[in-house]
Image (cartoon, rainbow over all chains, first blue to last red; front, side):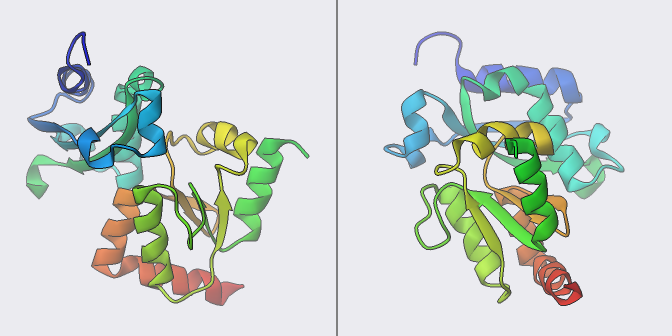
Length: 91
Length: 106
C-alpha cells in the first residue's frame, strides 16, 4: 500500500500516547489474506508495548488505552490488533 | 426494542456470551474461532451472537462496550476482553474458573 507505511503510523501514535519504553509493531496482514476483513483494506497488526502507564491498570484497561491511541486508524487502516501490553516490571 | 437495549439484555441475561463473526461451529474469522474454541474447552454452556448476521449489533456494540473489535466475551455482564485476553486467561486457567463460577450462579 502506498503512502506512509502503516506500521510506522501505528508506532508513532502509540509512542506518543503511551510514552512507550519498548514497542514492536508487526504487520500480519499476509496471514489473513482472503479473509473478509482484509477486503476493506484494513490490516492485521500485532503490537507489543512496554509502558509505565500500564502500571495499576487491568488488561481490559490497557487494551482500551491502546485502542484509544489508534482510534482514528481503527476505522480505516486497522482491521484487527493483537495486543501485548506490559509494564516495565513485567518484562 | 432498539439495538442498544437488545445488546444490554443479551449481556445481562446470559452468564457467558460471545459476540463473534460467524458461529462457534462455523466461525468466519480466526480471532473469533480461537476465542470460541477457548470457551468450548471450558466445558460450560455459553451463548453467542453472530454479528455478521446482526448488523445492528455489530454497529452498536463497540460503543456500548468501549471496545472496537470482535470477538467480545462477556461473563457475568462484564466485558472480559477480545481474543488476546480471553486466550491469556484460558492459558492461565482463570477463564475456566470464571466460566464455571458464572454458570453455577444461575
